[in-house]
Length: 442
Image (cartoon, rainbow, N blue to C red; front, side, top):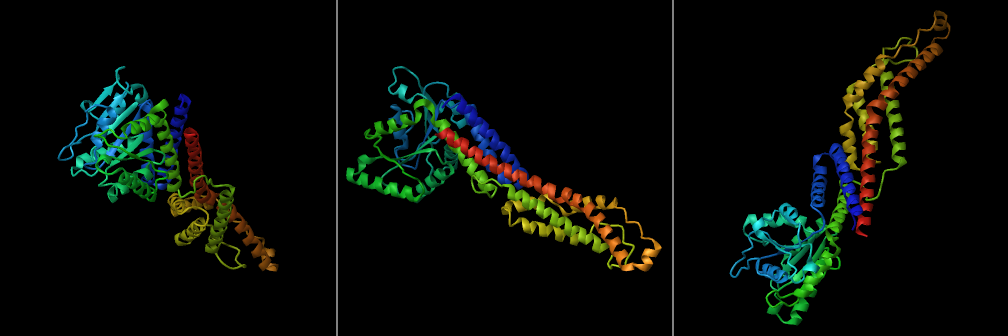
């Protein structure tokens, strides 16, 4: 990937953050919290450069994870437990230079990582840019150990799951694996069956097949299971080559960022109740205009009814907003219609943006400026009382309607339009961010 790709991803993160801000405004802080957290994490990752690929070794007690770390690194740096697990904190081996800020961000202490940068090191050229991290056991009884692992895992670019012939079918392992795989679509996962020297080759192949089936059932497409013996060296070279494939050209971190960005776009669409790629169209605008006209008509009718009844009346009261319950009924009918056109979360957003008292204030100001029609002359009232009263009433209704329509526009249609415009902007942003992520991964 190029600098241009990195710039495009940074722009995608900016767009995601802006859309998350709209979600927070319209749908609440809880709806936006996950998206804002993703924005922060991705921005921090890009700020620390993408020349290094973070490979995390995850496994349970006794799986030989630390031994495998030492075998890949070709040095005894990670402490290997004999009677009990001893990986109390994350340990890292770095090939190449310039990883200090990234390691600080991962929370790996300076005395817990070693740098391999001598020209005499084997595999230096192939592995340059890789940060191999040995995590504490996920099933450790010590809460601090689990916390450390849970902090680093979401930040890793490649996740290597290490298990053994005794625990390969552990439900806790597969549940954890499936959850992390689902939460981080696009991240590279490698599953390792370690300690194959303790079983027959035929049994190792059978277990690998069983693990593959379990992983597929857990939702992982096309899983790859590597067979290794950290103590005997079997399969370690092949695993190392698989890791080399992830670090070559230093694109894995960028691909991971793009994948996370695409996942965030899907999450954003889900949070806003939309289908991915579905952007509200002109039909929504047409419905909104029609709903506003219907609401204005209902309010005008209520105003006139409150002013007086009867076609013979030649003096109607100065128009005023209807009773609060009548006005609330108009608003509730409008929201009920909205439920047929927009997702439920957006109906809630509309309701929050349209307080009944707000519409009442707009109506009060508008109706206060309405002038009553002039009373008809004496002879018209004498010789054509019904027709004269009807004409008078129609003029009164016309003036009321002329005042009510802009008041409903200001107190109902316009604020609703702003909410739905934000809905459309979020849907559009999700579609564009997802497209950017796909291009970056291509």
